[in-house]
Image 1 (cartoon, one colour):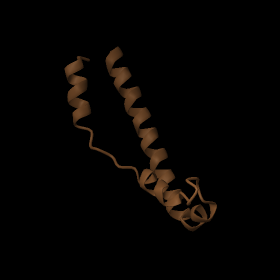
Image 2 (tube, helix red, strand yellow):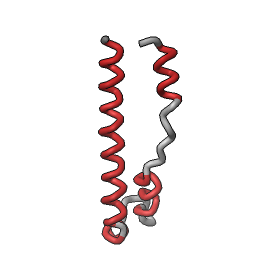
Image 3 (cartoon, helix red, strand yellow):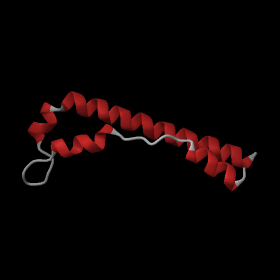
Length: 73
């Protein structure tokens, strides 16, 4: 695979904004640490955001594997 092909492929990947980053701001207490009460309150949202981030990570790893295979063939 040529570098120009890889660049073209990567430019076609849409931007992703994981909810986990925005949610983290909601979970921080006055002392700048994660507030357990806020975590409990936002538990369902946190679980969904964590699942979303995990799925994104797994998809990214699969894309890397595919690109490596394409490069080796």
